[in-house]
Image (tube, rainbow, N blue to C red; front, side, top):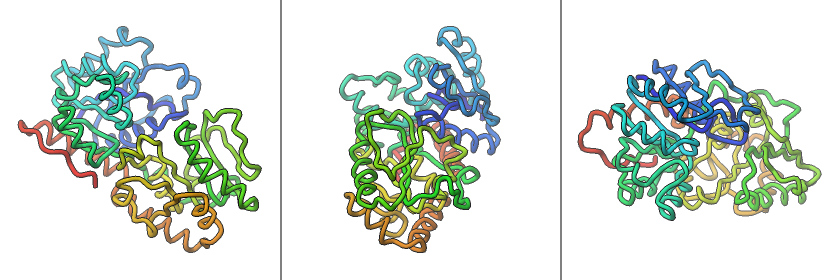
Length: 367
């Protein structure tokens, strides 16, 4: 197929998880013989922090102004087999208008921020990148969130075919490596600052660090306010390039996973960092949310935490062999069900169903 995608960014992973998701999916689709054209607005923030300016597995079309690039958009859509607009694409509404007015056989929206989108649709009838009226016209609504949300998309908002397309991991980039002394620590966390996540980071990272000052903690991510004072045994890395992610996970005895509040409330919303850490064999300690057990078995493939006592216990009482066993079990689970190759096949399956079926099927299950 020729697949045309309109996404927030694939060239810069600075401060967003969209790039990681699009890179993994596009690379897997390319390996399976598909041609991908990716439209991205040349935003100054990403322009100044571009870590993959020319992906070898897709043709990137950077543009400054939508009206200027519109003739190119229409030309690319003319012979596309599938088109997909992603959440937070700056010109998402007009891009969807173009896609829906085209003769592309499979027209889809990829929501990497489903709970946030649905809240906006309920409150305002629109998001900055999607109108409520777009949903019934789509062939496929791909969602980062599974579970009951899929039924809501179909029954409440009229999406004909809502399916999960969770984030994924590329085992070629994320796999177990020898520990790097630069990143060796008892627990690490990787993620961009988010106000609703910070109280949990304080509870699961900072408070335990103060209680066990002999242990080392690392937090990697941009946009943290300057007023935050990390404990002395917490090292903050402003931005860790993707090529070092596997090294950090492989060098951490435990990797902390903290979920955005909107995703916790919706459930069934695994983060890409969760799968990446697992693919590297790192034992993961995570907050809990509905549906987590459909991705990892608590106690066997993941450690759940409700407070700082749990984190302190995991860091101080679990020996390396036990943590390694848990990490390897999570790794086996991810490699079987959550690789980019699996997601590419799920994408193909949804496109095939949508294009061949006059009667739209029910949403697939979240598992």
